Amino acid sequence: MPKLWNQTIETHRAAVRDAILDTTAALVAEHGLLSVTMSQIAEVTGIGRATLYKYFSDAEAILLAWHRRQITAHLAYLAEVRDRVSDVDERLEAVLEAYALLSQESRRHHDTELAAFMHRGDQLIQPQRQLHRMIRDLVTEGADAGQLRNDVAADELASYCLHALTAASGTASKAAVRRLVAVIMSGLRRDVSWVRPAERAGSRPSKVAVTRNHRHTHDGSKASPS
Image 1: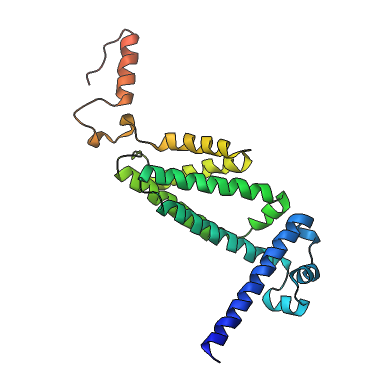
Image 2 (image 1 turned 60 degrees about the vertical axis):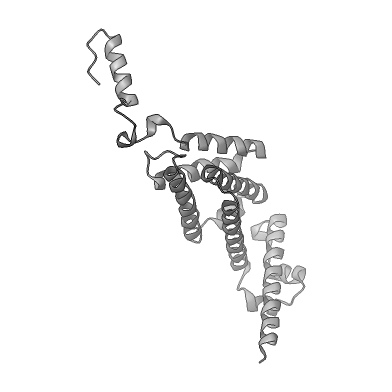
């Protein structure tokens, strides 16, 4: 079979598959997960039931495929956002904001039943790991550049970011999302009191030591030498 013919067939199959995914997602959003049938999907898509079953075994399989496509597109979009910003601090902030806005938009369009279905099983494990690595690498870059804190492991800070961003799904506006991201970033940015002692210039006492000395002096006891 000629190569051009093969490409035409594959393009057609991809178009039919995408149409099935989009149709199913729209029907579920309108009628609910349990109300959508394969006959409905075939009719609205404009294909026969026999053709539909060549692509998917049931409506749940279609939804899972649609969700995987959405996740892949979201990760690609976050990578694009990351790559178009040069400053490491601003790059992380841009990615966090983009992810938060995606979470907010997704929550608005998915009811509780559909959300529970999408998040069951282990299909989210790999994408979550990819996202965690992306955030971790950006945190590491920021710490190496001296713009972000380095007293906590980058893995832990990446987890902190992702857990904090779960609040974005409950926000009511883009402005609220940006405020949330600003709070997260304020906890990540470098401060002299967070710098590891070996990296501090001179022999300046730590913030804890200064507080302890102040407390001893206030109590009337002799302050320990710095």
